[in-house]
Length: 410
Length: 230
Image (cartoon, rainbow over all chains, first blue to last red; front, side, top):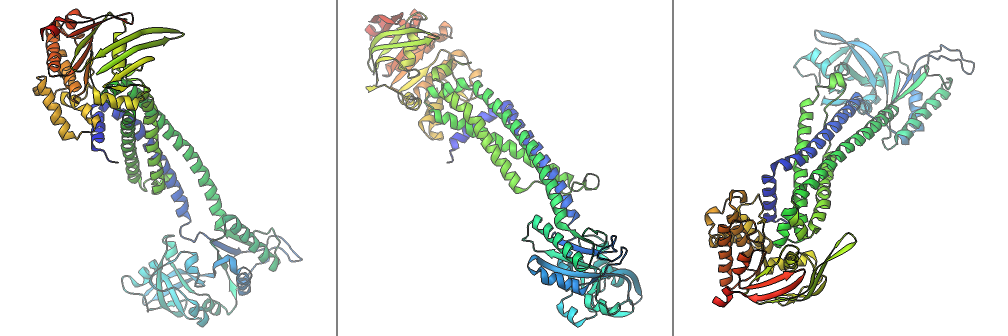
């Protein structure tokens, strides 16, 4: 219901009583400003944590092997452990439902050469799913596919910086490069959020590599993207299960971390998640405290304001104002002030956060601090209801004072 | 217009009860100019508050414009005040942050009249009390007499049945008092019922009927020379 006359009354009352309007507005604006800054800074911290893992998929698990450190089943310690195709196939077969992506890797450093340009790069042999596990972005061409693996094709996908080093501004797609003496066809160029090192890599089919490197079925590492529908706890359990199974299969002592270990993002995520949850809980506590202080502030001021206006209400009533029109007027004024002031505090807070931007990332781990829409909407709703309550309770009481008593007030 | 039968009113002060009005009978016809005289504590302000629907009564009957006033809630009372009554107070009771014109127009706002129309009507009434040129001044820029004339314009603007004036000259010097009383007389001459409360003989003498109140009962009720002169 839009009542122009009512709004005129309210604007006049606000306008003619600037000090008290500014005072009540200030409390709310300040509370919301603090609230916004607090939430923004914590979300900035949270962003830093999130981006620390951003270059890999969030559901990544890596199986790594080294040497045994404990004797087991008659086998001595110090034995070198080797992952093979059969381990890869075993995992694929045994846990099909719990796996979204799967890849294995062989790491080598080779010189890659094109015409007169040559450099050492990390050449990694992978499966097609690698693209999703490490969040590799294809800028040109395509990534390796199943056909490349089946045909053991000599195709290569190079990083953005490899391309820049070897080709400069010239196109690389369809050109041939020499990798450790073999000629490979460039079928794709990729980039990666992980930074320069990630983009100084090149990928070739794992089958091609195994043939080239000595015609064996050795693997350096197995990477698994667990089914994202798994909860963190179930994903952690899944990782532990693979670890146990592989140790058993390869005759490794169940506690031998050195021989075989799984780095599970689910565990890291859970740790970060718990940390952030505690941090958010603290912030919500402090933030709500700030809001409550603001609300109490405005309630106090409203009580004072209404006391001051009791006589005015008495006059209005003697002229024919019904109590509800007085309550409505006060509540509307209070809601207007809280909403405007709250919005001002919110905008100021958001503006300060945008000024901060990424400038605190280096030293204080605060990246891109900002407040989410839900928080903004939530805080606004709290404000409006605060204004409503702060205005309603004392106004209701004032409106019910008999006009004769109200007129006597000074 | 106003008919009161055996009206009683008590106030409780702590445990004690103060019996202020002890059976008042009063009948005021349309177009009368009545003053209620009495010293402080005689119950005259209480009577005005009850007549003005600013306060309720305990016993007896009160008819305003033929309508029995009983069990009024604040809302009904406010609507009846707006419709039938205009108030003039000793301390003027203008709203400080509104101009003279806006103060006069306020009762029309509560009547639901559109802004343009009510400002026009309010200006007419300001003109009537001789303050058209002061329409856009705030109350603190006006003299006491001017303020009271604004208040009278505000009381008249809804064309009420009765104008109730509580010590309308109490805060004014004798010259401005006279001009305010002249204004009330003019209003009465146009047919408006005017009900004045005062403790000043000179003021009462300018009305047409004086009701004297003492300790909550009416001691005399007679017409003045003014009435006989007409």
